[in-house]
Image 1 (cartoon, helix red, strand yellow):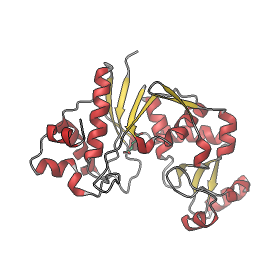
Image 2: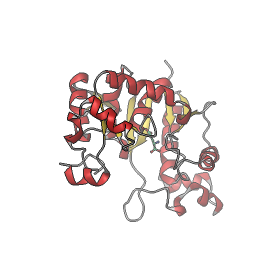
Image 3: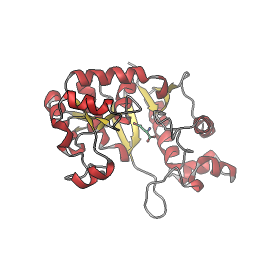
Image 4: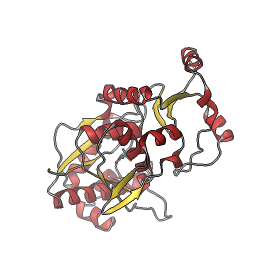
Length: 273
Ligand code: GLU
């Protein structure tokens, strides 16, 4: 079977040197494996994602020398597929509506997830379905969360392949993660898992910042009966202060480097390739 790789940026800002490193690493691993290279636009956040950023993604990646298969998959066009996966998890009794505000979560949390966010307390778990429905009908804001202990019990122990290593997943570290929101029937975790399977992705190459999220992804793959790709989480490109680059940081954007006269080979050298 021919390997399938994908690069999956979000069009909520201009691509920077960190994306260039990720895309170029991904692309060269794909070529070395004789794989197909896909581009996916992760635009479920209708407020932060903009068409001009999507257009810039195509422009910047083509400038770097990448080619990809057409048509490109846009997450915003696949909401029905995410809703179907959500319905499956709901039917398994693994999803509940959670009503606490950010401030309430911060006060009641015991512990933090691998990204440093407060863990969702057990407060809403005991709510009866009727009480949950009544609060939703009253217009209260909510998120749909995975009841992690039940999900782990249903899935059993999970692992993933990181290169040649087998890693034991630790989804419990994330607590009751958000699977969908009131306004959007999905989340990053749910759509990435549905899409990788729908696109037949066999190799996920992405930054180390998403290493721990893989625990949630393999758990969802197991619950939904989807295959797990092989993962490769690469080093991150850091700024002079040792911090991860950010899309709001204009001077490392590929577009400003290009405007300043840099070439694609300058960019490769800047990220150590
Ligand atoms: N859309 C995510 C990002 O831009 C990447 C998701 C992934 O590669 O799994 O950070």
